[in-house]
Length: 307
Image 1 (cartoon, helix red, strand yellow):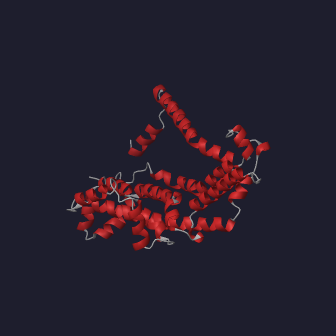
Image 2: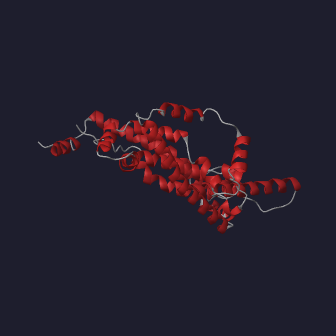
Image 3: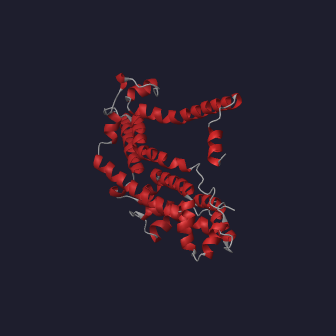
């Protein structure tokens, strides 16, 4: 019997009672966990289309009610579509370029530090790890970035602070330590240099790592508003997260001033605006996840070396 026939026989054999019970329990537990993960985002979507008065009176609804349906939060959030599109463009550009550079730096550093023939790899590893324990504080960091690196109103202020992550580098190093050394050695025998080995051998075998680091880096860039708050005052360079935070902060301030001064203002849907802004800000990154999640559990190094 050939190997293919044996594999087909094993795959199509009937499950025993114990195996079937375990599969059913596993499916139920995974389904329940998936429901728990999806439920908060579902509630956010429903709440974003619900009137403010209904949210205050009844809380977050589990099922949509047509009588309480309202688009007021989206009308206020998207009141200036040009600014929204501009901030979307800045965020998408920064996320795309920053993710590419961040993944490249993490994988290159991880590859060098995973090479056992690199004599100073332990010293450099300790140096990187030391930076995760101590830092100079916000004031020296701000003075360095603004006075000497000229991050004020510059795209560099949005890109460089998040471009290198020690934790991502540690993940890359740990992954590449598991790659067979025979691949590198055989390539060197064939005359390949380190750059060719990294680009043509290491990176193709590291697709699960690259997808994971790309998702982590993209999330960090997409959700970043702090660096924009520190360095950017030009409205044309506002990121999406910071722009939406400014809208929400302005609406909240208007409501507080109106309540204290007794000025009658139209009701501002603060709670539903929070939900609508969450939907606007997280939609693209949620759609990106299904394209990279399959690499998290897929190992491409199995069978790379035989013998």
